[in-house]
Amino acid sequence: MKPLSLTLALCAFALPAVAQDTTPAALIAGYEAAAGAKADPAAGRDLFLANHTGGKPDTPSCTTCHTNDPTKAGQARTGKAIDPLAPSATPARFTDSAKVEKWFGRNCDSVLGRACTDAEKANLIAWLSSL
Image (cartoon, rainbow, N blue to C red; front, side, top):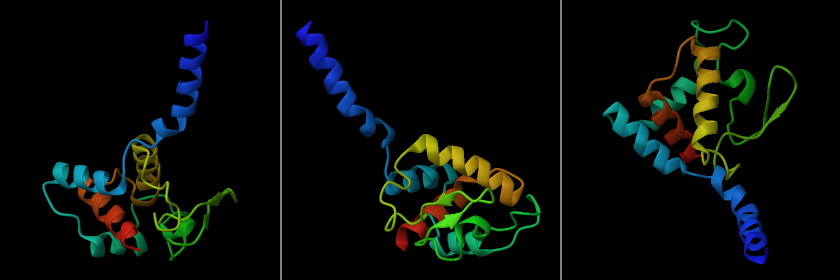
């Protein structure tokens, strides 16, 4: 029984590390490879700050929930607090690839009315990582 208990205990300690399966730099590199282009942080900034017309009328911009300053906390339309997007302010940001894809899927659809391209994802993460 002792070897099984030790194995279970070690697995329990390893669980939090499982969620952190990537880094912002690795995500950028992957999106760059998929897009066939180098990330452009200025284009990421422009995408984040711009008002868009393709998505939901109550979320015309990323700044609707995330504020103009990604190093500061935002607030969802439901009133829920959102941790800052910039990895410098929230070190765990962009370290869980499943969460990254989940939130890109939801937020790009809400703001843009479509999925973000790989280039847009690379650009946005590159800009947020530069802050």
